[in-house]
Image 1 (spheres, rainbow, N blue to C red):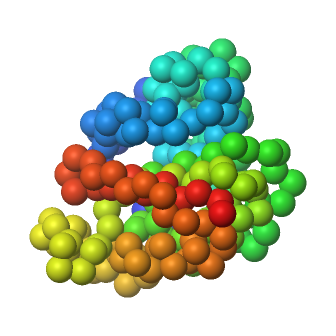
Image 2: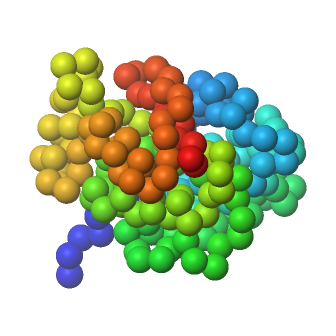
Length: 213
């Protein structure tokens, strides 16, 4: 039997179903500072690849008006997301089994005002990013946004640490890798989105905001 592929690259601790991510603990505050002003009042947000679920709870505690839908193809991650959601007084919905590489993953979903995805497209085949853009086109209306967080390559401007990270990812799985910003922009443009905001974040990460055109 083949080994289950990893879904993250960090040492996580746990308590019951709750999992604790060192990365989420470090980046949730700076991410929220950029993300929250982008979200309209009473926004309904779909998070793709929600990991432990800690981002969802942190953001909903800062914005009590938001309704957040977590998701993940990994059952243990969904259990963690649901465990953290119990602290959100119903504003974080039961996690969905979503894999953006699956055709028509977006069918039968409720309406959303925004999609958020952090640290997914580099630890997944490129088809996952294409599926994300395709699904965003189906789910979002004119002016609504899809927000990505993570490392990206930008030619000669690429941070050396991101080049090293890219090599490390490819050594683990040739289908993985830090994605080229222009390639990401291209697939979203093909599906009706324009890159309207690019914000530098700690540790050579970025937030990209794609708006439905």
